[in-house]
Length: 556
Ligand SMILES: Nc1ncnc2c1ncn2[C@@H]1O[C@H](COP(=O)(O)OP(=O)(O)OP(=O)(O)O)[C@@H](O)[C@H]1O
Image 1 (cartoon, helix red, strand yellow):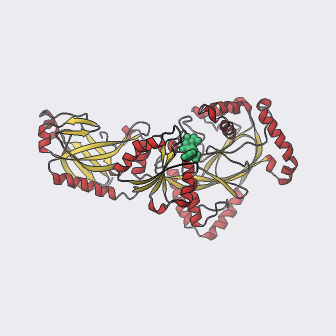
Image 2 (cartoon, rainbow, N blue to C red; image 1 turned 30 degrees about the vertical axis):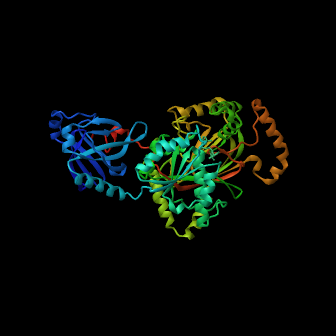
Image 3 (cartoon, rainbow, N blue to C red; image 1 turned 90 degrees about the horizontal axis):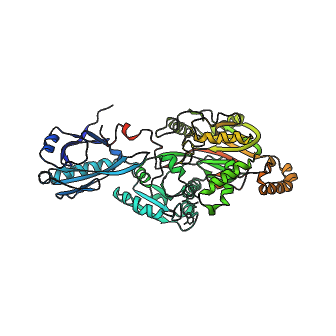
């Protein structure tokens, strides 16, 4: 590794022990000096600090400030008494706030205070660190924040005010905060009114529903300004410039869990402050050349559509409704006939059966980013050639399905740690299309149980999985208009009977699509994955536990 020049290096006092403190372009480090032992022996009060070397990446420093020095100093949240000798020899101090990694991907903001022998040196340290922070151009300075006061346990406002706003202010981030007054307030404001040029990012405080509002508003706005027609399924959508931050305060925080690894407001706030960036694929869903919705996690027809439809009728039950509706839908065992056509993704590095998972710095997603920038350089003429090539590669499957699921990410969450498609990627421009054909209840149960065990949920004769760029689904009765006309009235009646008699064993005509937790109005849909259409203030789930990380503020 290339040796970096030292920007500053001094012997400073930390918890009454002398440390050699060094600032380089990428790191702030401090290590025990031989004199430290002598000073300890001379009666200084020892803190909990371990002997050794410590290192914080500059990119994870939140802020630096000069600190008032008394004979008492507050460090790590606790008051400590400085020895008279230390206060006398090192009367000036500065405090560095930095990202401290806890267990299970949780981040915290920790402080370390260094004491200096003179004011000029202290000032020089603060200024030099500040200058290094200003060079980090990926950090947001001004954010637009939407708070859903009714999401989850209705704690959005309190969470923001008590846990997030103080961190933003410490990091000198200014905000415009809007507390939403109705559903779709954030979406509509982003679509038309918001002066987006003023901001470096948009933050939503709430659950997956709020995140969905924000992406719908931002994507629509971007397309309108670029002159792209959202209703045309063939249009290539223009990526959104502004990054989105999610402060989890909902009952379902799956997107946050999938992109950060934990649904913790402080962790998310710190990812925003350090200016992380994680691209995310977005699926557009159309019916007959009419835009329906965007999806970033799961599109599910059959089993997951039916669970959502049933659970919506049982909202009064609270979260227990998902288990009850799940059991009911499983026992009902409906299957649906139709045609799935899809365009396989052939030019990518990963497959849905990979053992490796999408993690921070994922090389599969990076490869897609590289291809995306190459694609942009292709001239318009080549797009027609590509379309013709695509036409020849579509595959068609006509069958009876218990479930059709398209996962744009693993869909892992605390309830399902492996997720629906464990090897799916956040930003490779594909979705994993999982087809579960008609099978016995026992076999379907085996498939479902494998989502929570080590066994491969796709390694069953009635399950197949394809990594796709586009797909279409046509329910059997929609396959031709004349067929539809002939059967329409009879099927409506049939569907009604089956809903009222769920145990009769006959298939209802149509299920509904569950689109990231919302029910779609149409069963016949056309889906296209847009590679890296939005960006989040996140970095993907980090792989290493804290003690394995070579550059964290623990001893090295
Ligand atoms: N002020 C408001 N009043 C009522 N509904 C709102 C308001 N602001 C946002 N919403 C809507 O509330 C819905 C749920 O919000 P959110 O996702 O934040 O919480 P949640 O409890 O996780 O909900 P869900 O689990 O249904 O996604 C969103 O779809 C959003 O459109």
